[in-house]
Image (cartoon, rainbow, N blue to C red):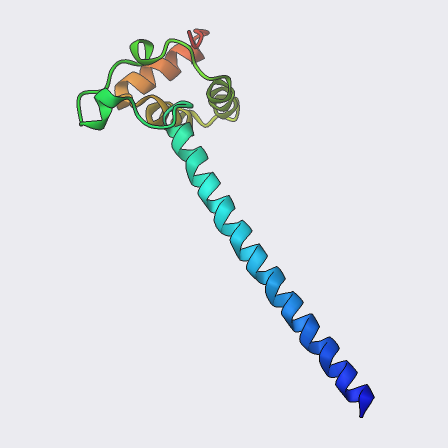
Length: 120
């Protein structure tokens, strides 16, 4: 009889421990998703936490070189990697979203890079 009770107690403790671990995993997964969303937001605005105030109201986008003449190094690496992989359209899309550019402005920028231009 003692043997059955001991094994029952161990089984219940293992179940409680498994439930606690599952709760921890779900909590960590939620936190990771929140952080990924924040990183995507920062990436979309070239390292800024939010879009510039002038762009929040729906004003016309400010040209990239006026917004921020310095490109964040991670964005530059990402664009160059996409171009090296032959993913020009992806590079245009990333540049457009990161700097709130028109399609033409982003394409012109990427075309300039292809011809040997630089990010500055």
